[in-house]
Image (spheres, rainbow, N blue to C red):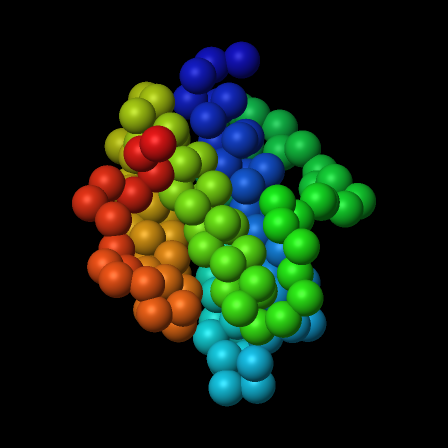
Length: 143
């Protein structure tokens, strides 16, 4: 498998996990944040679908989602839900940065840059919800 296809496959897996995790976030988030959760969930679903298209477009096969995912932290309230959303967006940024670095064609690189930009924005939104300053990082997806 090419490094580009592998990176896209990993990004797709991150998107599957993000969609799943946002279900957990939605179940524990404060009512005033439900619209934000809904928007972010829809964005990850759209990115998942675009990633499947991109992967198949370069001759890859999209793996199915896992039946369930394990959250990296226990979610019991609105604050821990926000922390899970930050973790999801951080993981997504790492996956999309890898696609940027390994993209062999312009369309894949453009998809990855857009995805990385979007996930950085969503992470900043959740950082702001938690009152974390600064809300952004200089290089999203970089360890």
